[in-house]
Length: 376
Ligand code: ABU
Image (cartoon, rainbow, N blue to C red):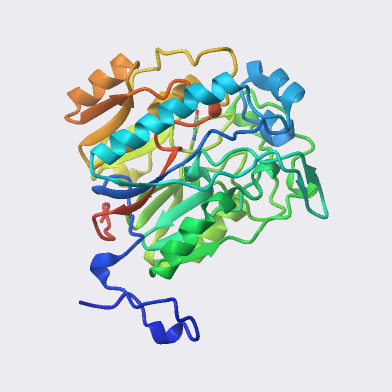
């Protein structure tokens, strides 16, 4: 069996052991290979982010006043508890399916922090590992996130990252952004159409959220958004090098943040496409089955939400057949069945209000499969 790396190159680190390929700790090339290990976030400690143009550019208008009044405070306990119960239940479902589930540390998100450029009253949460990490093969990349309250978000996951690194995974981080005022677009105005498009972030430095990327082996699809700029996409493309092709999709979304309720590869040759946000896919999808989900019917409860009802399109594959789908979204469940999938109905309807669904709250660390091209 080949060794994944040569211990001699890790001079002086006696804790590192050569590992065998069949023990590789991190291995995920796409969104559908059979899942073996996953990180599921924590919501218990979520703190309301402070009002800022980066939030204004994407958060639903009915929630603005809540952010303005409560930035830096813990979210109401009943909201947190309902979401926590759903997330813990999801962990049990994954474990019952034979998946090893890992969790971030509990951290105090109420601790203030500062840099030479700005101060934050606290963090946000460690609920959405999909936003802060991109797994590409055996590498975990920490994203240079644009929201100031998320500056230290990866720290809750560091014990896991160190464990994976010691076991042979590659671990890298994009350049830590300054997030000074120069990154944010002072002239930001809510665009009414794509012709009028304006983003909250400038090209001052590379920024991206990992959830603006979607993996299909050697081809990775990205969208530019209010947290991901051209420079961030260029950084990732150059970092990954010639083994990968990073494509930027044309997305019809005037308030974009994260691609995973917009464009979701489900299996080789099958992609779920949000009909409100994607009008056409690149020619390379000509032989793919393009699946269009029915429009959401459920309402996110309670007035406050950090995303649109399209969060129900934020699905997560256990393998190329089994897919987690919001249990109360009947039309979507039926659609998946008609397309030949085996939906696993589970409800995250209270968790969704924090801005994420099945794909956001998970980070697939290990799937059984290898690097392939699905388009050649
Ligand atoms: N990652 C969450 C995406 C939510 C949305 O696009 O509506």
